[in-house]
Image (cartoon, rainbow, N blue to C red):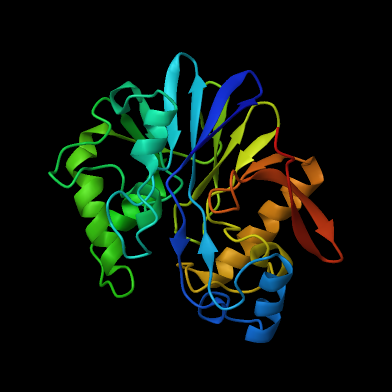
Length: 277
C-alpha cells in the first residue's frame, strides 16, 4: 500500500508496513482512567479496549538520493501477523531495495528498524547508509543492566551493530541531507529524533505516537517511553511548535497515510488528518 505526495520540491511516498496490535489502552497511557481512554477511542471509531496503530514509512527523494525513514518490523510477529508489508509496498512503488541510498531512523525500537536485516543475516538494503542520533547509538551500545529493553537491545545487536561501519550519527539541528534537518526529541528513547523538512513539514516519530490519545492527553505518561516525564515535556514542546507553525505532519503510527496538522483544542490538541487526494 502506497501514497504519493510532495514535501516542498521533494517527491515523497508513504509505504505501509502494516498495522500493529498493541496492549490495552490503560497499560500504555498510565495516568488517565481506562473509561476515558476507551470513550476517546470509540469516539474516533477505534476499538475501545485495544490499541492498533499503523506503520507509515516515508520514502523521500532528495538530492538525487532515495531516503527511507524507518523500516518497520521485518519478519517479526510479536505485534501480530498483519505487519511486515514494507517489501510489498516497495515493490508496488516500483522501488528496488538496492536503490535505497539511506535509512534514517527516528529511534531503534523494533517497529522502526527491524526491517534492516534479513533473517539470513544479510542487509535488506545493501547499498544504504544508516543515520541515527549519536545519543541513540550511545544508549544502545553502552554497558548497562537491561530489563524491559532486553528485546530492543537484542534487535539492535541483530539489525544495526553488524552494519556499524555504515552508521552516520546525527546531532540536534544538523542538516544532513538536502531539505532535511534532525530535531532531537528525547524521552521515548534518549536519542529519539524527529525530522524537519523544507516546505513546512515534520516527521514526528513516536513523540506523539497515537491519534487521538497522544493529542487529547499529552500529559499522560506512556509506558513505552524510556523517560516518561521527559516524554511529556518533549511532547508538549513538539505539539506546541507543530500547532504554532502550522507544520504539516507525517505521523508514523497514525491512521493511514498519517498526514495532517495539529491544532490546539482547549489546553490540549487534536490531529486534523489531511484530505485524501
